[in-house]
Amino acid sequence: MSSELIKKGIESCRNGAFEMGVSFFNEALAKDSNQAEALYNRARALSKLGRLEDSLKDFKKLTEIDDSNASYIGDYAVSLHLNDKNNLAKEAFEKALTLEPENPYRYSSRAFFKDRIGDLEGAIQDYEKAIALDPEDAVALNNKGLVEEKLGYKDKAKDSFDKSNELVGYRPESKTVSDDVSTVPNSTQETSSPTSRGQVIKSVFTKDGFKDFARFSKDLLSPKRKKK
Image (tube, rainbow, N blue to C red; front, top):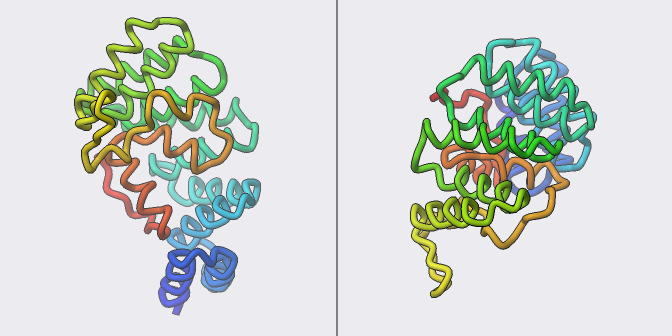
């Protein structure tokens, strides 16, 4: 029965009816308060509704249910940051990285967090680690360029942007892009600090992670994400 409620909740959210989706997830959780899939999807739905404190509670509970799941902890870290709990967010980002030290997304996540709290040199170091693990990560290269630009490292920023553009087939002079350009924020846009969870995740995610976010913009995903 809970699985049917979750399916209805996901379908509601897929159609943009997030309030209705939350009500279905609530019903499922009334039957089993530790149902991870319902908690995960409700947390993301609540985020879409701007109910960040409520969303944070669900993400926290997920980490209590499974304190070794780097995806839960990473999302919890983002949620903590958006609720202005940066000291706890820092700890959560680092724990997620400890659990998945070879996952470039974990470095990119912490890098973007460092950027937002003003640790620009630290952000660049983490982006460089992410790129070392995945040299074809165009999003990390682009975001690294944005940080370098803020620090006035014009030549380094241009090099990062050029490499990112080359990977996605973006040619500024012709304004033509490949089918995958949507995964990379343009280097001349979105330079101000994002304020919504959606903007944060869009800017943080590496290639595979961004595809996850793109799907989430249409529906909510099962928490059983494949680990790298």
